[in-house]
Image (cartoon, rainbow, N blue to C red; front, side, top):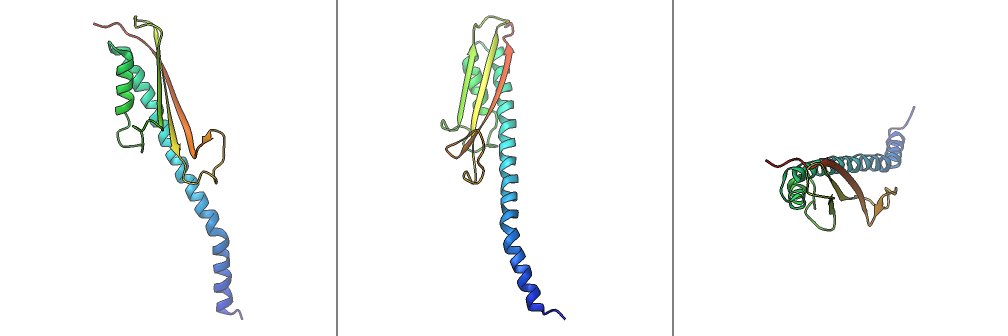
Length: 139
C-alpha cells in the first residue's frame, strides 16, 4: 500500500519541475499578444496617415497628426519619441504622386533575456507598418 505522504511529495516535485515551463509559456503567449496588437496598430496607423496625407493640403502635417491620434490609449508610450518613429515621403504635392508612410514602434519585452530573436534591441522589439497612396485632387 502506498503512503499518502510519498504521493504528495512526488506531486510537489512534479509541480516544481513543470511550473516554470508553464509560466514561461504563459509569458510568451502574453508577449506575443502585445506584439501582435502593436503590429496591427502600426499597420493601421500607417494606412490612416497615408489616407490623411492624400486628402490634405499639407500632407506631412496631416500624416503626423493621424499617426499621433490613431491608437489612443491602446499602446503604452505611443506618443513617446523613443518608441515611436514615423517617416513621410512625398515626391510632389501634385495629384497622382505617391505618399509613402512608414511607422516604427518599439514594443517593450517583459523578459528581454528570455526572448532572444532578430529585431531585438535595448529590450524592445521593433514592429513596422508601411503604406503608400497617391495624392488625390483637391476640390
